[in-house]
Image 1: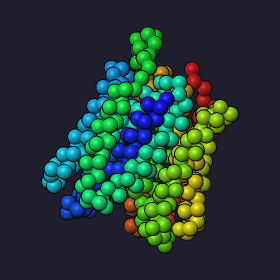
Image 2: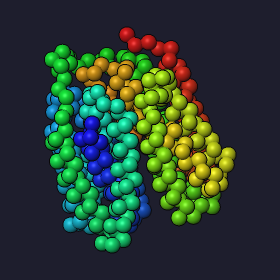
Image 3: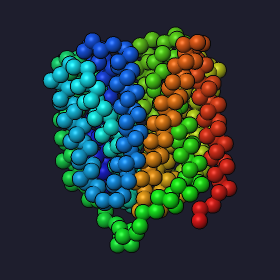
Image 4: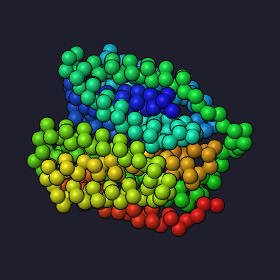
Length: 371
């Protein structure tokens, strides 16, 4: 299991050391705010399109190592190439390649881990640790060597990730699974899966909206930059213990119950953000991120595995992830309209309502049996 832990740690270390610093990097290149928004929006949209395709290709070819390595190599090439240009179109193309490959890699690596007999939650938690550590280390590197240094750091980490991928003892499918026909029609007639796709769009959509506007909200309610950094750090690390206990919860209550529990915690979390807009209270409730987001990411893929055929698992997971991206694009737009006309505080009552619908859908899906 140690090689999988190293894989997750290095990949998310790479992501944490690069993703949070691109907005500053683009500003440093004198790219306008509207053009920065276009970079982020277009890359999110393209990744949403590519994720199901890469998942289908993965299930079709059964070339796990090759696809995983290709994604990381392309992202590393795009990162190092950004150090040689300041042209807007070039940056747009290179960042899109980076974002697409990194976010297509996530469902692929989850699919590979889910095909093993190792506890997924205990592997996935090292991704959260890697992201948090990567963000901190990259910040220190930037202080010493300048803003573009994070691109070099992430490139080196990408190379180490590829080396780790090549050493992964990926388990081969049985002959039955390897030669079983991929039935996409059966996947899209699976009512339980289709409802969960909608749950993903609502749940992950509000999470993406929060990621985009939490800094604005925190400043509006009176929080300072120093406390904001501490809050984000605590929130990120709160995911680790919840991911660690996810397998015990599943053993006692079942995977569907744990998914439903994570959605419930998110409803409560957004409600607190709306009804108690105080920076100290929000910081004090940091563990709700672990109980909602951390728990969801630890068990959602296990839930998908439990309701779809194994030979089409990669396609199912990437569609599920793409649904979250689609929900994020829509909810981020709605949130921007609300902030412009009212206040950032009001987006959280909307988030609470949206996730309440997701919670209701999880209760509905309990009565649906898989054929």
